[in-house]
Image 1: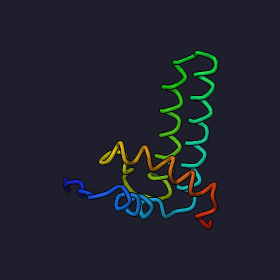
Image 2: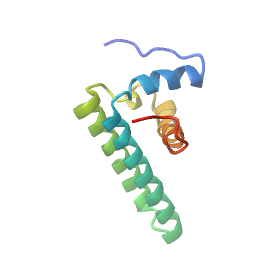
Image 3: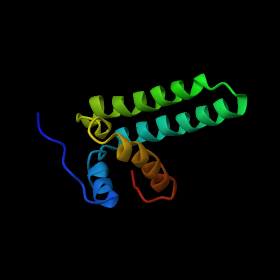
Length: 103
């Protein structure tokens, strides 16, 4: 098994992350999953139904992994870079909402 690449900065990782998300359907599934996860987490906190936080995490990753395995045909970055990848889902959604990506 190949060893995971070491990144010297988050911006270097984010360039790699975006290359691993070049398929527009994969990105769209990430946006959907991340948005639903955020809404579920907000509702979990509001309603004090904290078990929904686990549901939010699972369904957020489910959308993303379908994008990778079915459309992108690659291994999710989460497997090798869990923290950077988790943060990057939100950064990519922010960039999309700010119009930085053209699909």
